Image 1 (cartoon, one colour):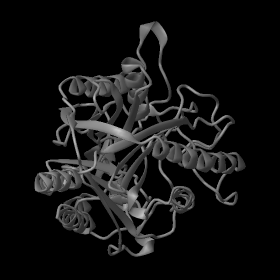
Image 2 (tube, rainbow, N blue to C red):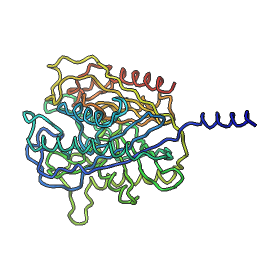
Image 3 (cartoon, rainbow, N blue to C red):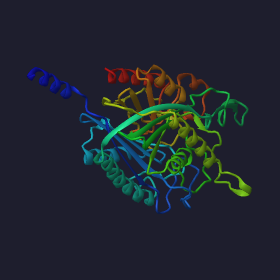
Image 4 (cartoon, rainbow, N blue to C red):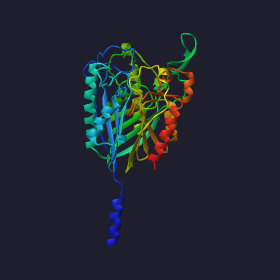
Amino acid sequence: MMAACLLAANALAAEPAPLRAGIASCDITPTMPVMLAGYASRKELSQGVHDPLSARVVAFENGGQRLVLVSCDLIGFYYGSVEPIRKAILDATQLKPSELFLSATHTHSGPWVNFDPQKGHTNNVEYSKALQGKLVETVRAALENLAPVQIGVGSGASSVGANRRLPGRDKAGNPTILLNRNPAVMTDREVQVLKLTRAGTNDVAAVLFAYATHSTSLGAKNLLVSGDVHGLAEQFLEKYLGCGVVAAAFAGASGDIDPWFRVLPGFKTNNGWIPEPVLLGTMLGEEVAHVLEGIQPRSTNCTVRTMLKAVEFPRKPRVETTTAAVSPPQPFHITVGRVGDIAFVGLGGEVYNAIGKAIKTASPFPHTFIITHCNGAAGYVPTKESYADGGYEVRTTPYEPGAGERLAEEVGRMLRDLGK
C-alpha cells in the first residue's frame, strides 16, 4: 500500500504545471495635438481623433518562465525610445529581457514616440513619458492576473495587403520601382490567429492575430489619429466579441506590403461611402472572427521558453543610405519564444514578406507567428534579389545584400535551439 501511495505521489509531482495567462489593455490615445509618425512631408500637428489607440498585453507563464506580448497601436519605437521603455518595464516586473516582446502595429496615424525634445515636438515628448508609465502598469496588471487557460491556433487568409513594389519609370524614363499596388506578385496572405479561453470555460478571453501589411491606408494628408488597418481590426473584434475580450494585432513580415487602398488623404464618407481604412480593418477583423469559430482551444501544460539575440549585419556605406535616419545604427534584435508548439518570432525591423514566409516554412514548430517592429527599429530588411531593382526600401535600408537571408538563417537556428 505504501509503495502504491509513493507511486501516486511521484506521478502527481511529475505532472506539468498548467499554462497560465494574464490579459490587460490601456488607452494610449494622445490627449493633445501631436506630430503623427511615418511621413516626412507631414509638418502639421494632429487635428483630432478618428478612432482610439490602445496597448494590449497577453502574458503567458509556466513553471516560472514567462513570455509577454505587447501590441501597441503605434508606428514603432524609433528615436532610441525602445530601450528606455523596455528597461522601465523590465525593472518594474523583473522580466528577463528575452521574455518581453514590445511591438507596434506600425500605424502611420499615431504619434512619434520620442523622449528627446531636440528631435521632436514637446507634445510628443510629454506623450511618450505618459506612454511609458501606462505600458509599465499594463504589463504589471497582466502579470498580476495570471490564471489557467486553454489555447488553440487557426489560420485564414486575406487580400487586404498587397505587394507594393510596382515596376515603372522615373521622370527621366529609366526603369525603377514605384510604391504602388502590385497584385501580380504572390505574397504570404496568411492570417494567424490564437484563441485564448479561461480553463474550464468556452468563453473567449483574448485573441491574438498577425497579418502582414503596413498600416498605411492613410497618407501624409491625414491629420486624424487612427489605428489604421490593424487598429480598426482590433476595435471591430472587441466590439463584435464583446464581454471584455482583448484582441491584440501584430504586423507580420510586411516590409514590401501595403494595404489594398493606400496612403489616402482621409476618411471619405460622402453619399454612403465606407471609408477604406474602416473597410479594410473590418475585412481583416471578420477573417479573424471566421477563423476563431473553427478553433477548439485545448487544455495545455505548455512549455514556455524565450531567447533574445542582437545580430550585426554588414552595413552599406552611410552615403548610400538616402533616408533621414531617426535612429542611430543599431544591432538587429531577434526575440523568439514558444508556448508549447506555438512559436513567436519578434523582429526589430521591417522585414520583406518572403523572408517571413521562409522563416515560417523552415520553423520546426507547427505554428510560427511573425511579429515585426518588435524590440527595435533597425530599418528595412529586403531580399537579396530585390537590390538589383532598387526602390524605396532598397535605397533606405542600412544593410548590404544578403542580410535578409542571414536573418532567416539566424532565426532558424534560434528556433531549433528553442525546440530542444
